[in-house]
Image 1 (cartoon, rainbow, N blue to C red):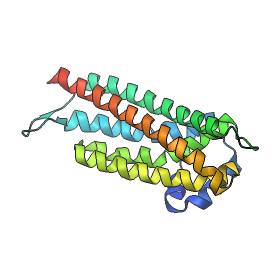
Image 2: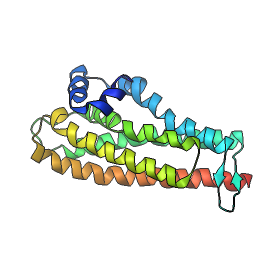
Image 3: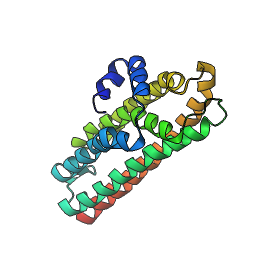
Image 4: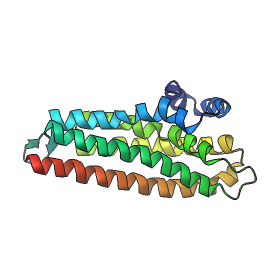
Length: 197
């Protein structure tokens, strides 16, 4: 639930144990966590691009029209929701060789919580400066990697050594998913700016 946000940021070890004991389903995860937190980057990007606009150099800012920004925000939101399920599926595939192989439901739940820092880093899109957004993404990705590293052994009942294979596979594919999302975002929001400009 949304109350796990502070726990994951402040004391992740304890929070992972609590999340594990709750045994949430994917529907509950999406309803109480992902659907809400995925709105952070989407709404912030919508506000930032309609209020301030994209900066294309030489002091020129191009704000998006409301309908264009709304359409792009919906596509962006759906892509984020799909990315959580994809990373959860990758986790499930990576953990296939463990004796206590976690269910796909459990893996998607884990992925939804691991992505919390990435969701929160979207706040900086309120004022879309490229360097600031890039910095926020790097910070969010680093803390996401930390949550993944800390959470894997506890959440999947595996040793730290076993978790390193899952960690490296998930991070590699997760970074590719992130890069794809960022590319889609830049293309879509930039395309919207070109229509307006």
